[in-house]
Length: 419
Image (cartoon, rainbow, N blue to C red; front, top):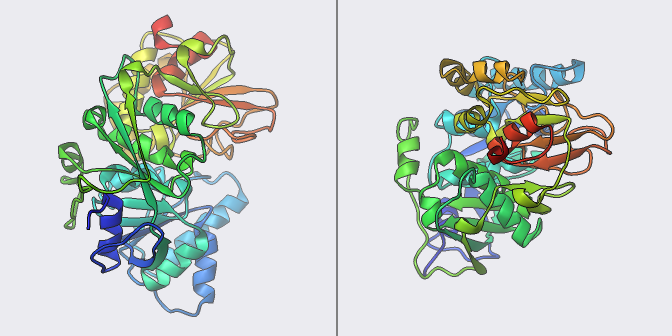
């Protein structure tokens, strides 16, 4: 029976030859992840279960990244709960300051997620790891607690939608633009509880950083997961990091899909998602004049070294507009150090930007970049809901790092081509 890559991975982890969409299955997990918002809930449930130990201390990752360095007493307590639990159960992958990075950038960087894995995380953007050819999805804290006890989780096998991207990317067009364009096409509920499978010649040419951006935002279309077929670029990324064996899966040529959509990327401009949904996309040429107060470059979506290089190429030799606050957030200590060694941090500082330690803070309006009433931000993050980055009357516009950098200089949302 022909199957998609998603169905093959789930079947293998359910010890079945095949699975079909709609089927309820129990699957073994390769990694369970939680952060400083979601882990304390899971830990409380685990400790109250009466179980003495976790199923496998090497298959749990705890990453405090949302409110760190701790912004207040409450956030300090959250991390304290994680630290105590990690020590008690000898959790091997607990990342604190100095090692801590934004979870969905850090774990692939550390080689903890590999092709063919099943990964669950108490964070909706866990789907990022589909870029490596893994089935990865967000779950609730209760599911994480159960997984820490049993090493398993149950799923309804999702249908798959195949998105085929052909043609050559235009100047300043990135994976962020492809996924924003796609969400603009199908809507924020266009892939509800389905696996978004990305393929095509344009995808073959995408670097891993852009693939992670696209998989990350599959959830913004309502998807259960996003996934890419592993190829040479995947193996080149994974092999130097992997400390265990892995298996690469691929969809059968005649696998069944709920839908197949094909795009010519040559026609796609840099995209900007207007408030208050990621589906409210416009071409950069149709944005008009929208002054901004803040620009944020970072997050689990666009905080990788490739993103910082792109932003620095736009900012080099230029200054941020006097009315704009530019915040740069390298996603991990490794990326921070690499940016420093490449001179990118000097470029950002010379442009009058500020550089934050790794944190999710600005993205969710929790820390390090809150918007006041009526303020506008252009951001490389993944959500722009009402009040997402601060006051309910503030506005967030989503864009790629080049557009965000150019907008910081222009004082309004605009293209690098205008500089």
